[in-house]
Length: 265
Image (cartoon, rainbow, N blue to C red; front, side, top):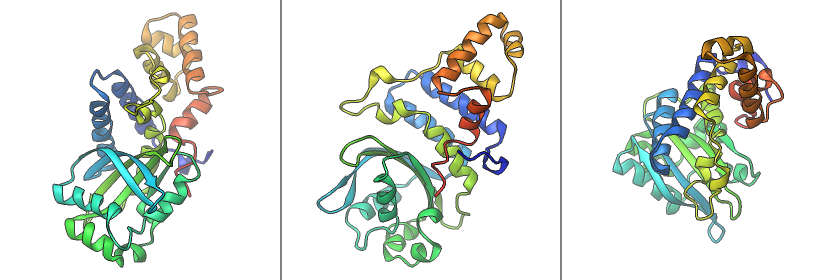
């Protein structure tokens, strides 16, 4: 796990991320409404122009990704159809397809900026990119791929920026990875055999404790802020640490501020 200061997201972003996760877990809408809430806020975090979320698997017969259950916002019909056509019918295939597939084969959640996958020369010299992306006003992307097990199936999230904008930065990648690595239940929800009994949701009280822990508060501080006894605060802290498989408060902070390192090549 990366542990240098340069690999940490700002504390205010870590706290905001936790609050977002709590809002999504507590939202009473269906799966797609929860995904939309998360992505709308993640779009703000990363200053993206549009996003999409799909369940994708690779068709072994032609080595192309097949996407189902796609939801998206901020993309015009032309831009969305360009993304879809590029992945299904374009020749040559989009230059990011092969590196994305290689990463997926490792079986771990990963998050990558376009420049981590494709050089500027490969990207801007690709006729497929020009026809299906650039000519339609879409340029840079940030992808987060979460394996769903079997048949190379994954939960695929893409954030996009318009032509003429700066590429996504490392900070945007890290925030995206940390948030999406903490919603396993949402990645699996809605699948034919999703694991409903494994949906992780902290109680509202535990979410408050989590925020305070990330702010560096002591147990006595948490008890005072929440108007509970210190013994009660200790119980909540222990449950939160157990939930995130963190051995102590510092380990918990590292999980939310440094992630697990799998957004780095």
